[in-house]
Amino acid sequence: MNQETRKILIEKVQKLAAESQKNNDPTGWFETFYVEANEDTSKIPWAKMTPHPSLEDWLKYANLTDQKVLVIGCGLGDDAEKLAEIGAKVTAFDISSTAINWCNQRFKESSVNYLVADLLALDDSWKQSFDFVFESRTIQALPLTIRNQVIEAIASLVSPGGTLLIVTRLRETEATPEGPPWPVSELELSQLQRFGFQEVSRTPYIDVNQPTIKQSRIEYKLIVDS
Image (cartoon, rainbow, N blue to C red; front, side, top):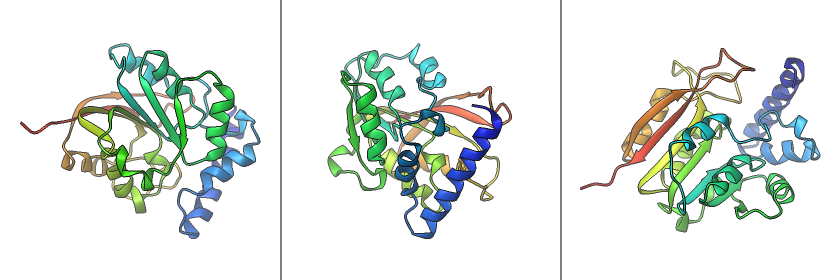
């Protein structure tokens, strides 16, 4: 995807997101965007059609065989499929029914349990139910007005002793950036400590198409009280 095409798509994302916020529906634009893409992956700027390289790198040193795994905001399913490939028991959800239908069409023989769900209105049975939770670029896609709620919802899904892996853009200040995406601040991430998470590692990630944007893969462990 060339830079001009990417710019046009990002402007469309920002317009749809702004309209959704005005209608007090900050997540509503995702379904609209997938529908209007009309099964053309070139119109989805975040759809790489391969697992995220930072996830693949992390998996070189991890063993998730038979672990209960959740992929948040799974998009077109590539990360979820990679996790299933290594033997994890994967549930993956997205708020867009069109995206989930797309996943089921792409991976007809998949063992992944693809579901339509809203991160901010998940069933209570999901709480503390997953050994490993993967969040890639979902927090940054949602506005700062609901960011604390989003982070709390994600934190609630990890089982005691489990792992949360986040891939996100980062920002240096607490000033509200233009977006989406809205990079995540250190203060926002510090909320995870209050829920019992300890940062295990942080690895910078460089997108060759956007080398100046600060991004990281951050691994957290939910500490069990002794």
